[in-house]
Length: 282
Length: 285
Ligand SMILES: Nc1ncnc2c1ncn2[C@@H]1O[C@H](COP(=O)(O)OP(=O)(O)OP(=O)(O)O)[C@@H](O)[C@H]1O
Ligand SMILES: [Mg+2]
Image 1 (cartoon, protein in one colour):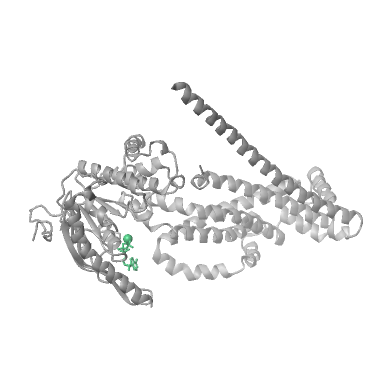
Image 2 (tube, rainbow over the protein chains, first blue to last red):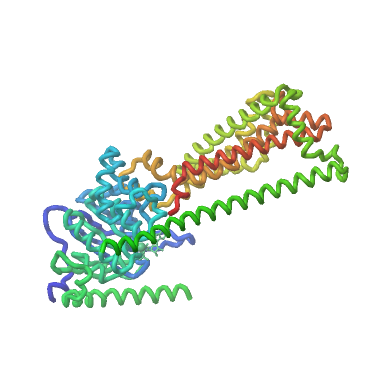
């Protein structure tokens, strides 16, 4: 077994992991009354400052996992620990870029970005100064006074990013944040994200459909099995050197090797998921 | 080099300016057209009414005529009505309407919000509210007059029950329709319960509430006028009832005209309010 292939072992430091999922299962009750099991027996540890991506076929439960870590809903079984403390209610140490929409349509870009600081009791002038920096950082300098409806989809994603980063969260949750962007903008934003992340010590939980993106960004890629009852299928360490250039790293032979390995895992699950979908629909 | 840039930029910017002026002209033209068409409809309708009535094709006793109606309002304004000066009748009705509009709106928003955010409360009270809502509220007016007398309180109560339910259901729906993601996002960013209401739930529900205010002003007016119609000593509704009792069709129409102008002005006011409070919906690049 090469170093790349080894299934990641939870490090045995004394410091508790930033995020820990212990024996997590999540079930939903369908309208018909049947129980739909989404996640089953998930165990996962994410140390402080680690960038972890999670991939898996559509509908396998990636967003559900995220909402458990964010504390939007409790797991059916098992517990979520944040820095060794059991999570109750909303996770106050996290910020999240949602799969759909972050920006409040009735607030300008400035008010959207400064919101986190305002909610935490900072006065308006200070919050706005700070927000101005972040708005510039995500390249929206001339759009401070615009409402989200006046921005493009990509620009709204940048607002979302600035809105999260301004509160300097210890945990950054991202649900397919860049999937709606064109390749070029996407690479720019990915690079910017990596740069910002390297300055902070945030743990990142990054959901994506795109395996290349996952590998290019992460310290670790986790593959979920197809639902129902998704489990962790593979847990891969990505030992590519940092700082990375997202646009070019995919030409690296090491990158290709890793990609091939993970893809084998992922492809099987995608096929199973596709077959399940066809079985249910026919 | 500089020359070249200038020669490239300035015609372009000149074109932008002329394009802007052109757009403005087009918008103005469109407005003028709409306004003149609206005016044309008015002229045709009142003109043919006047024509039919003056030529006795329709009976002026039952149908009156625009000219007579205006004259009647003028007489009321100058000589006063059977219940006192005209402005007083108008003022009484207006006061009742505004009061019931405000009270109905405030109660509607408070209850709608409370039930919208509180699952238990909405489950418990839901059937009762549906039941009360199913009652044709106009039948309550005589009861209010029995309870509160001929004066203002009974009219305000009538207008209030009419407006309350409209605003209530809209506020309730508005609170329910709030995007879960946005609520979750605000929570993560550290919003307390009060902050959540201020930054997310109320702004989101405001669209619904303000659109309900349009129709609810009309209903407040209906409540007040119906109340006056059934039992009162002042007000436009009372005036209409009096005219009707004297077989004075022109008087009835005159009262109606004043009412509809009032409603039109109120609607314009609510639209202004709407533009101000939900500006984010109206700004476009
Ligand atoms: N609130 C809910 N009630 C019932 N079922 C739900 C609920 N939320 C999610 N599910 C189900 O859980 C499963 C996983 O959903 P989830 O959104 O986590 O998938 P995902 O992996 O994020 O998919 P995608 O990649 O398409 O975003 C789906 O089958 C979905 O139908
Ligand atoms: Mg998802």
